[in-house]
Amino acid sequence: MSDLGHRPEPQGTRPFRLDVPLHELLMKPASPAPVPMLLPPSEKEYLPEPVFPQRTEPARQSSFQYTRWKAWRHWKALGTPYFKSRLLPGDFHPIIAYLFTEWKCNLDCHYCWAFDNSVKGMTEDVAKRSIDWLHSSGLRLLALMGGEPLLRPNFIHKVIYYAAKNDMLVYVPTNGRLLRPDVIDKLGDAGMGTVNLAVDCIEEKPGLEKALAPIRPYFEYLLKRMHYYGYTVFLNVCITRVNMDDVKELAGIARANNLGIDFHIVETPMVEQPHYKHLNDNSTFLRQEDHPQVEALIDWVIEQKKNGLKVVNQTRRLQQMKEFIHGGLEPWGCRAGQNTLIVRVDGTLAPCFPLYSAKYDWGTVGDHKFDTRQLTEMKKSCEAHCFSTLNHIMSYCYNNTRVFRWLAKQAFHGFREATGAIE
Image (cartoon, rainbow, N blue to C red; front, top):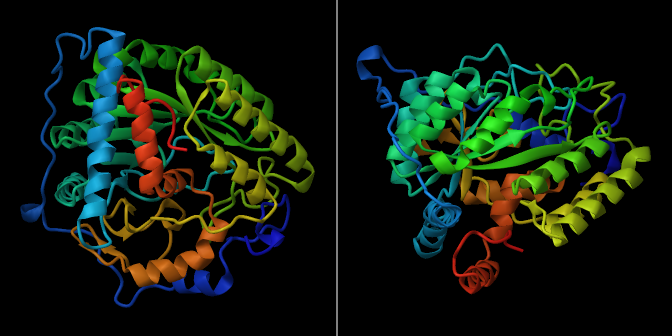
């Protein structure tokens, strides 16, 4: 980061973290503006009605079959598109796409600006056209995003069913409040690949509503049905100033259940979010006096990872969290707009989640306008302000040496399962 003034502070926080000239460029309405995918009813497409139930017996009968299946499924979703992107000409080769089916949420975690309850959710037409276009581009890993995707469980059932029929691994993030057993069964039966369960604390706290206690029965049922449907589960935890003890307890729960876990560091908005009402006097944002405790917690996480905890973040990225809170993050080779992208609820595109609200014209589904020169120039500034975990994982893994080293490790273990992150 270019200066410490961009770090979260309890009072008088700036409404955005980008350098002012870049922010003005990205927030200036495009001329002409990108046209959302609004079509007359006669031209609209619809998702097929899911068959439920499809399964009459477990997807995989044993733990060995389950782990082998996970490894093969993730290879098809990530490995094949990765090597195609290395071999095929051009700069746009999406490997992971984030389909924002909602920009609404049923909770109000005070650090989170990623929802606006006045925005309508994605239509079936946009969802189907998006999946078809992404599939034709070679993509096989589709991450649903929000807000909270499960606000419309029947719609998500259709999306997962259609994407899975198109050989996509579908990743579902959720705070779990709407993840009832009947929803788990429908989504699992439809072909859901991974559940990213966002929980920041055990018991709900003021300003932190993503808690495990209110969803404990759903969580237990989710784990109970993993082998039957063949999906995976990992915990997603944001480190704030009010949940550091909970982070350790959640890591213990992940270890006890042999689950993966990934960590985020609390951030203020990248670009201005007029709808966000918790920018100032926010109890979750880190303050300078919190830095020693945060650094000790990160060191603890790294040590737990060395001792077998399935941490999704690379060790180097965990170490960079300490650099980030002090304003010293170096460029990290972001691949947004090249190997990752987002599809907004209206079908317009952006390179990454932090820039969801930017007004720059990157095109629409079926007609992207990602330009490598524009992206490269933009990232000279925005990378220094961004700690996007998922985009960093992609960027870190977009390295042949690291990939081949990781594949050698998998071969040594007999390709029984995906052993460890790419380091």
